Amino acid sequence: MSVIKEELDVKKMYGEQCVLSKDDFMKKYDINGLSYDTAQSLLQKNGLNQISKAKPKSWYNYFFESLFSPFNSILLGITLVLIYTDIILPETPSYANIIVILVLVAASTLLEFFEEYRSNKAAEKLKELVATSARVIRDGSEIKIPLKEIVLGDIVILSSGSLIPADLRIVESKDLYVSQSSLTGESDAVKKLENSENSINDINSLTDLDTICFMGTNVISGSAKGVVIKTADDTYFGKIAHSLSNRKTSNFISKRSTKCK
Image 1 (cartoon, rainbow, N blue to C red):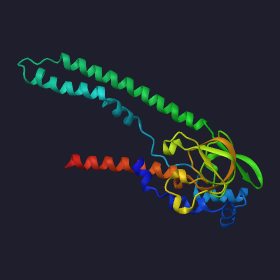
Image 2 (cartoon, helix red, strand yellow):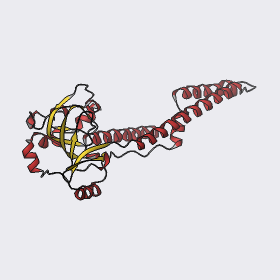
Image 3 (cartoon, rainbow, N blue to C red):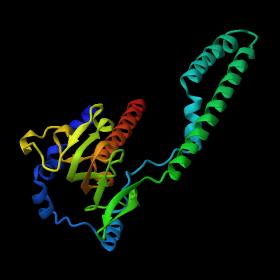
C-alpha cells in the first residue's frame, strides 16, 4: 500500500485548497451552502457518493476457492501420488486410499463452501440494513441525509464519533482531532484546523494536510464544519481502492500470461 500512496500526489490533489485561508477558500469556491434543488441536480450529474465496487462473487467462485484451499490442495497432491503408486504401478490396482481421500476433499469443500457463502451473503444483507447518515446544511437548515447523497459543495457538520463522508475542507473547527489510521496506519489522532499552519512547499504527506479531512476517517473529538471538495471515486480513499483493484487485476493477468508461455 505504501507504493500506491507514493503514486498519489497529495500536494497536487489538495495543496491549493489546504493552504488557502478560510475566507479565501469560501470566496474562491463561492461556498454558501446548497439548496435542495441544487443538491439534487449535482447528485444526478455526478452520481452517488459511493466507491465503485467490483462485481459480487458468484457461488461458483466460493466453491472453487473452497475446493482449492491449502488443506484440499495437499490432499489432492497426495491423491496424484496414490494414483501412480496404487493404480499405475501395481498389477492389481487398489482404489481404497484414493476413495477415502476424495471423500475427505468433498466433505471439506462442501463444509467450507456453505460456511463462506452463507456468511458473505449475511454480511451483504447487513450492509444494506446499515443506513449511515451525515448532517449537512441545505436551504440554510441542518438536516440528516444518507452518506451516498452527499454532493460537492455540501457543508457537513462534524462532531465526536462522526464518520467523514467525503473529502472535506474544514472551514470551522473547535479542538477537532481525527483518526486517519484507516489510510495511514498511524494510531495517533491528527488535529485539523480551519486555517493551515503549513505552506504549499511543506506538504509531502497526508499528515501535512491539516485543513483537509478524508473519506473513511472518523472524528475522535471536537466539532467542525467542512465543505465537500471530493466525492466517491475522486476521494483519496477511492483512489487507493481503485489502485489496489487495478494491481490485483494486473498481477492476475501477468500470472496467466506467464503460465501460457
